[in-house]
Length: 83
Image (cartoon, rainbow, N blue to C red; front, side, top):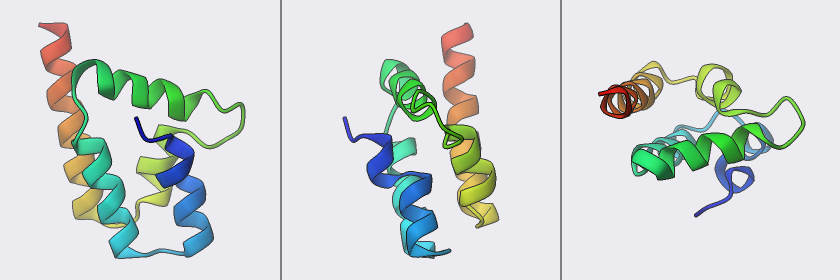
């Protein structure tokens, strides 16, 4: 599993608002499902600072289409886990 610090908020923050990097974040998040997606969220949220999956999606990913793709993917997999 790729550590969230390698692709997450810190990476985007240090390299600016870059569409290519945001596309990479989408590819990684949307490439996870089930337990992998849960582990990704837990890893991103467990660093003990303000960097989290929520911050990554709602603040660091600024492209509306990329954010929508990520949220749709998370929503789809959340519904599968509930059912």
